[in-house]
Structures are given as C-alpha cells and as structure tokens.
Amino acid sequence: MKIVGVYGFKKSGKTTVVTSIINSLVNKGYKVSSAKSIHIDDFSLETDGTDTFKHNAAGAERVGLVYPKGKAILYYDLDISEFLNKFESDYLILEGFRELKCPKILCARNESDLKKDFRDEVICISGLVSREISSYEGIPVISYKDIDKITEIIEKL
Figure 1: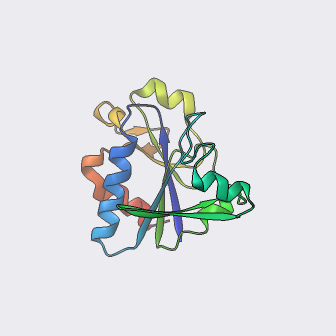
Figure 2 (figure 1 turned 90 degrees about the horizontal axis):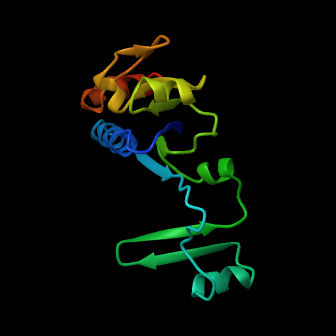
C-alpha cells in the first residue's frame, strides 16, 4: 500500500485536493482508503457515559460501531503507524497527519504559507497557491483541476 499525505493550512483546498485524488485513483481502478487527522482538543466519537465508552472502560481493546450509514472500529491500543497499516488498499490518502513521514502534497493559500511549512517530503504543491505560481523550490505547483498530473506523480511513487 502506498501512503500519500495532504497537509497544509485552513481553507487552502486540502479536502478538495484529497477528494479529487481519491476520485481519480478510484476511476483508474485502484482500491483507495483515506484517513483524516482531527485537531480539535475535545473531539471524540464517544463521551463519558455512552455505551462505547463503557465497553472500552470495561477492558475492550476494540469497540465496533454500526450505524445506518456506516461501520467503524475504534482502536485504543495502536500507535499511528500500526493504525494506518490496518487499511487494506492500493493507496491510503491522508488529510492532515503533518508530522507523519510519507510523501506529501502541501496545500497552501499563498507563497507565504509555503515558506512557513515546506517539508522535505513534499512531492507536489496544490491548493489556492496554484493560481499564483507553477513551481516552488523545484517542486511543481498543480491545481486540483489538473488532478491527472497529481495522480501521475502519486502513481510513480
């Protein structure tokens, strides 16, 4: 499985780029999974007193959720890399996960954003900044509208 991260700044186009990549890869016949890192301190799928909270508090290492629109398994004992290895697909596209070492696409609003958070793992740049420049420090800047170009870069990994 190839893992590619998309990270960047709020309102820079991350989700648009992620969903465009997923759609493009799926249309080419690949099996694709995704994961989103949420940076809200008090975010939780469960809260004190819920049944799933009680299951985990009682000692369950995994708790499954089945609801009308989907299914989920909550893992309590895995680090990030162990968790990500649970996905079974050709590609795993990450949104967020800024600190994880993997090939990345940086989404930025402008060139100033690029200077703030450019990393060695960046293979491509996208987001709103693609309206202003076509490359940055030798890395191509590509609009999500040219998703085939981004997908080509990903497929060559």
